[in-house]
Amino acid sequence: MEYFKVELEQLEQLLQQIRVAVEPLAGDERLRQWWKVNFDKHGDLLVEYGLKSNLKKSRDLVRATIETILQELAKLENEYGDLAIDIRRGAIQVAAAQVRLQTIKNQADLLAPELLRLQEHCRPLLEADTLVRRLPTLAGLLPGAKRGTPKNAPSLEQGLRFFLFATKEATDQQATSLAGIFARAAELERQLRAIEFTELPPMAVTLLEGLRQVGVRAADRLKNYIEDFQHHPPSEIRALQDFRQQLAQSRRREIGAIIDQLPQLSVRYGNLLLDLSLRARALRHNELMPALLDKLQLLHKSLGQALPAELQRQITTGGSPLNPEWLAAEQATVFFTGLRGVMLTFKLLFQTLTGNKSVNANELQRLTVGALTTLPYHGGGNELERTKIMLVLNEMLEEYDRPFPYELLLTHLQKVVKIHGGRLERAILGHSIRDQGSGSHEPDQKAARPDTTLARLIDKLETWSERFEVV
Image 1 (tube, rainbow, N blue to C red):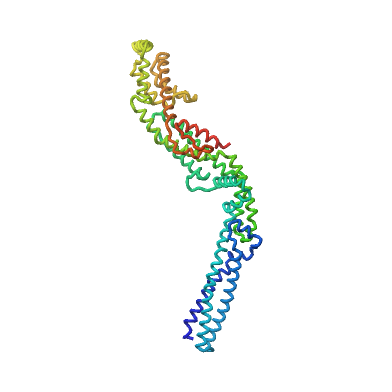
Image 2 (cartoon, rainbow, N blue to C red; image 1 turned 135 degrees about the vertical axis):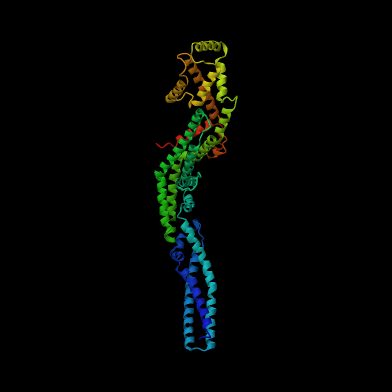
């Protein structure tokens, strides 16, 4: 027995290795489910959905090879057991035992090529299992749905794009889904609110603040629209969501049951996508979302960087039309120029001789600069703004007699304030905008012209954002 111990152990290990290799394949449900598939019935269908045409042959070879290997293995294990008993009992001569041992080993070695062939036969079936389970998905059924309605293939793709756009979860701010657009709109709104115009005079701040509020409202409208859309999705989206859940359950069934359902699933899927394409056309304004985000980005860039710096430069530069001191001096000169100016000079001088506060070019310029750098509005707005202007001007002119020269000075200050405000407004709204290709997102436009002024940008923001107003 000691003489054969090592050789018997090696033979036992060899037989065990063969069993370990073949038994998992024999019990693998991914393989066994193919035993029930009617290839004569579904052969053409399998090829239509992209499966290899030799699956039936692979199935038959796998089943036959597994049966052959297991039968031969069982026979060799019995022979090995009998031989081990004979050797242990001393019931067999050494030479005879060696012959039987070598015979069993040779026959076991012959199973190795069979195992390799079995693995090769299994590979197409295992790959087909993976492929079939991918078919009951939105992507997997799309080719079959298109084959069912070839003329409507573009509409099916449009419906699927709309569904994915509306339902895909986003972890970034890319404009490839509603969730991504919401995240980007929220970030742009935060960035717009964070802009500060601390170095500019109140009137310029008020004008810029009004434009910023246009952007904030546009972002807020878009966010509210998306939230409402997600909380109350169209029935067509809900129907496809339910269908996707059904597909998830279908993928857990056996291959034969999945194959049986493929034609019906493809037809159902095609109908759902057609319904979604109609809904997408009815909600065509959704295509404006990426372009609207680009406009908001441009507004933030303008208000947060270039425009305030340019305004500050013009306001503080001598001789600039936006410089309050230069404008005040210019208008003071006009005030006291010509025949009317000479008459006003004598009249104001007479007022001074009677003990009233003097009014000359320097004093008028000081009052004007004070108004231009204090007032947040320039008139022409609502009643509240006009009232606030009058309150400030009344306080500035409280030392002057009424009606003269109070009314004369009031009229002059109102005029200069309007001039300055108008210039500021034109400078702001006429500010050049470089659109770095955001027009590519605009629907129904092959080559949209870039925005050239802030006024055009604001107009688009207001017009487009109104389409997303939640009623």
